[in-house]
Structures are given as structure tokens and as C-alpha cells.
Length: 94
Image 1 (cartoon, rainbow, N blue to C red):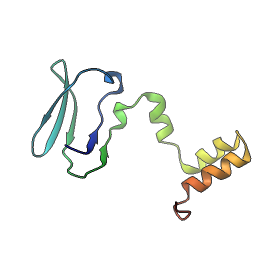
Image 2 (image 1 turned 180 degrees about the horizontal axis):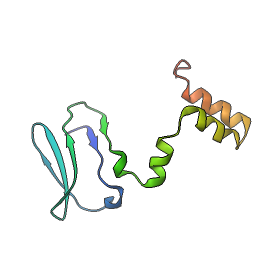
Image 3 (image 1 turned 60 degrees about the vertical axis):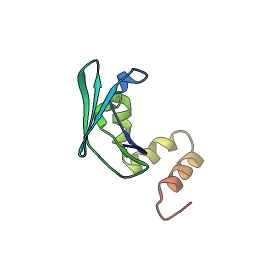
């Protein structure tokens, strides 16, 4: 599990949880109740996230398409929309 991050319900942030590892799974418990179960990943620096663990507002924004993001940013200003378009462009590079 080292250097790989797993999510659990956001309501439990800053609460003590217990993690149980096997060769193939990661289980997270809070007060004896299992609150998350994931397939174990050995990819360093990776993230295993479940949309169910996010607050509802975060889930809603996660589902926005790039074109919807740009349209929303345009309500702030055209320069903001242009900046976000550049961030979202995979061809633009670093």
C-alpha cells in the first residue's frame, strides 16, 4: 500500500480508521464497520478513488465535460475560459 492512495467516505476524514491488507485487497474499517473495499494496487504514486466517497457537490463537478467547464469559466471572463481551454488541451504540454 506504500505510495498508493485509497479513498474512503469523506464524512470520515480526520477520524481514526483501521486498514487491513491482503495480497489482493485493501479494506478500510471505522468502528468495526467496513467502509471501503478496493482491489490492491502496487502502482506507486497512484490513486484508487470511488465517486461514492466524494461529497455530492464534488461528484457533480467530476461529471462535467471539458466543454461544460469552458462554458462555465466563460461566465467569469473570456480570459478565464481561454486559460482553462489551455489547461485541458493535451497537445499544449507543460
